[in-house]
Image (cartoon, rainbow, N blue to C red; front, side, top):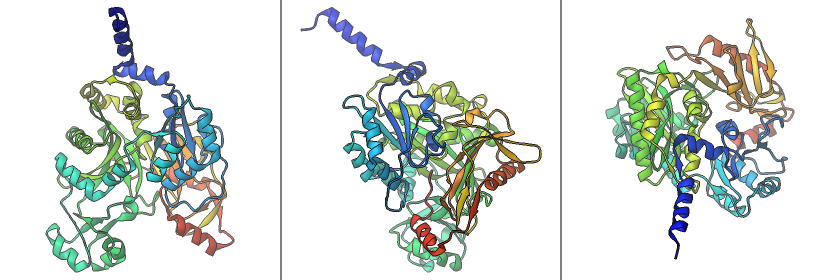
Length: 502
């Protein structure tokens, strides 16, 4: 039986283990001894995470920094089947002997560490378990279910978050569409349950439009048919924790700009700028995100997620667009803004939920702080894709790092750095290269991400002249030629399918 002194010591030990607020949480991660990995095609989504978490490493298929990043491990390429998705890339990495050896070399006894992914499937989970890694996310099965746009709509209904007027139904013909969705008007947006918005969102005004996409629509058991509204996009990231839903500020979303993407509904960037939205819209977005996050917790989900909101420009109504139950392409912006640097980036709270540590946190107080305009600095990112219909082989690709633009709009490589915080002025930008020399560019292929201080769009939500100059200047840094065996290359590109790397 324990003495009073032993009991007191035990209670003291327990008290020390419990983290009390932001300061303790920051210190905990700076002294962390659990290996934590972000495993993905690139390290774009969690750039800078290694500066917050001791022992954080990136394991990537694409080495964006040419071996200059101190915490990126990229194994030698070995023969593999053509990748059809990011999940395929991650599964390839987890089966790669150099990756397995690297993880084993950093293991703390039996504890091989935690793994974070942008995308993963049940095979990924099995491969991670096989080498002793614990996936720090809800199960692939749950994520996949929630990622279904039809299911997302139903979760929103339960949460009390409004969606664009819609129906969820099976569509087998244009005549059936008219009959079932005529009350929504005759200008529709149809979304299939899964996929990138650039590929699986269809704008239909007539039978001719419908026939272009009929095969993709009719194969689904259920699709989402929405009334088409005049809208602009926005995005917001959040994290479901045991203490409530933490909500980051609302960001604008860049969609469909022809300079950046060949896809009419394709995401191509974000900017964070407090005055981009009125205070009532920002408050409404926070409220809806908290409601949705609280409902996700009831559905069994915890951790990082992102919501796209559509703002009707005719009446300022706000509607849920879609859910991404994961780290996203906007995460790099969220986790480097002033509010995150002042307290702690959002991804730290995600990791906390998957570590064996108790903590206290005043989520309401944190959300109030993060909502203040003075805690929101102005940044933006442009996701640059290859927009031509041709297929070419890259003979020269620009380095990742800091570029400077002169008064004539000409850019030059200034210095090597690993993320956007090194950008000192509005004449500089950080570029993360995705497309490498020797690879094939095709319509929709990712070239890289450009990150800048200041606005990306005008008050009318068009690209600024500054943005257009930078896009053209970066594109000019890539050199390419027509491949020798065009039919073979076309076949390879068709197999890849143009999936997103981020």
